[in-house]
Length: 551
Image (cartoon, rainbow, N blue to C red; front, side, top):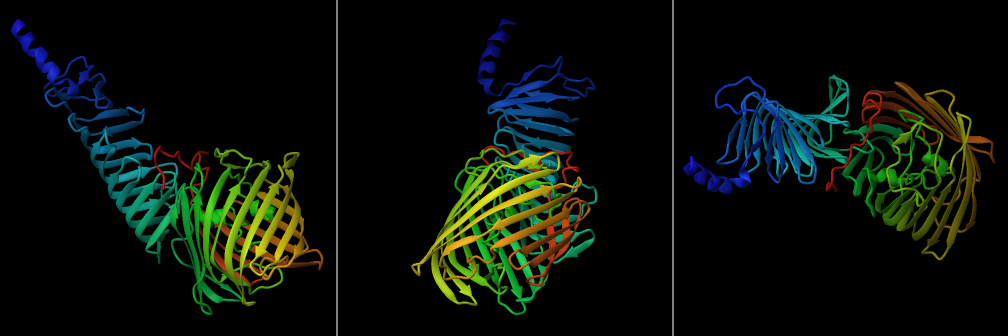
């Protein structure tokens, strides 16, 4: 007995790094049907095994085997937990690599993975899962194989993707490869786009922004008086919580490709992904009313939803070729920027924290926005080319809520521009808006604004085009929705533009048509949306951002 003890202590010291501290009542070498107590394994973290009918260990190499299945919880040194449930499980204590067979359920920060065969390194947080499925609050994906990465940037092969919560989704994107970046975007390459049972022509690559949704993975037809019939493409080539690169192009029967390439870089950390178009939303209408810019678009799924921007700042660069510019006096103005660069400071006095998502309320906070920019611009058909340097300031008051259905808000906007022609030009624009919620799914807005200018500009597109304007906007949300907006020139007592949109909102997809009277433009609306809040049980539409993940 003493000889055995003398041999045991040196062996224990030699195997100490790989010893398993097993808290079971008994470990049987043969088949057993008795339940085992949790086993704890130190591997630069803690590995706890529960629910094993049969548990074997090897003190020589630190291995652990549960051939009849077990639940494994690994807690890393930083507190991050990974939970694995498997039909059979083998763990190598030397390498911290586990091999498991189905049915498999693996829970990480990205969501819950299921599959049939898993090889996974708990210490390095990487591995491979075959016949994989991924369920998150934002989307569902599956593939013949998924490669799991430590930072959550997982890759699926021969994959399927949808944001629908329904068993039979409205749409499915099938792709040769899908890359997932939690809380930011999903990148699909070599795609096939299926709506219902119909397969539509698709672009070779598509990026879905998890923070803002995605446009159409296919080209969309349209018509207007200037270009005639055309097809349009809108794609995000780069998107995340640090930067965004968007391409918007149109090819018509009468014109060569026209459009814009927009790049936006966040100058400070932001908590959710964004798109360049969301930051530069006034490009097509540089003199757009500030309150109109903040109002829900007439094609909104829920007209009561308003997004409050957190305190943030951006650098942007914009390259344009004959981009159409909306004007109240002319319908054929287009400009090219070579390029325009600038900075935008949004909600300067607001919080950097993400607001409470999208509020179904009339309440809105004080907001101050400032933008500075410079560009070499060519305008058609005037054929004027000049450099422009400018500053825009927006001051928006908090909403004054009256009762439960009415709110009043004021805004003041100032544009100040200097030109290489030696001139300067400024526009001052105070405005007031009234919001009324007649029902739970409808919204009525009435806004008045006045524009006064001083100085001289060589261009037409940034010159004051109306003095006193009334805007009426009415929209109804729901499964079938519509929106109507009218702009009225009060000095001439006429509506210079009207816009109508009719939309069918599905669980995760939006299809509709719109028409604008001024440009005689007819187009198709097609957007891929996050699953509705009702389908998601009211949970946030943006998942938490794992530490260390960024573009």
